[in-house]
Length: 235
Image (cartoon, one colour):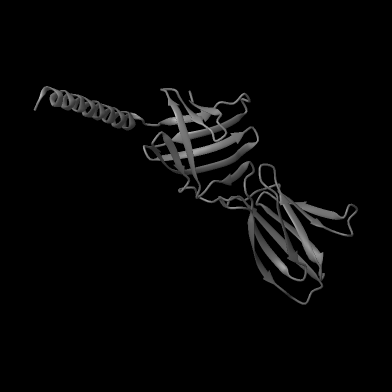
């Protein structure tokens, strides 16, 4: 091997060595990046909270809320790859909405008896719940009763071929509307959904392009080119 060939070989070996170092640095850097605790978007309005909580090295929770309640939330698995934070909302449980079921019977009387048993989703009875129904004979076109301490409200009505429109409401819960047949006696169990909860995010994948990661924050470049800062929440 002449002097020229030796010099070329030395340069090639040096390049290979540099590439190995760069690769080792990238692998090391990638391995050291770990998200933990809760990070929230920077907002000028202090009554808005938009936060990601990294619960483990794999799982995360998301919540978007304000003074009036939770607007949206989700759970899933995350992955950091190629400077991208990938959020897979694959573990979010759907929420229940207000619902009811009825026990129905008939007889030859000209009136019906309807009893409402009102609960929350933990099957706890709710007192002082308003049961409002349309009544053409009432002064304002509707009438109503309130549930007692046992969460029970009852009404007596003349049989009628029209359906009865009912709205059940209570402070802290979403109102629930439904209709029923005025020809039958009924015992209706109603379950009210608590107020202040938005819809869950489920089966959605978000990819955040990471620009910078520091000990107390990380920044994301949005699709429109703007930068959003997610700052570690200090309790």
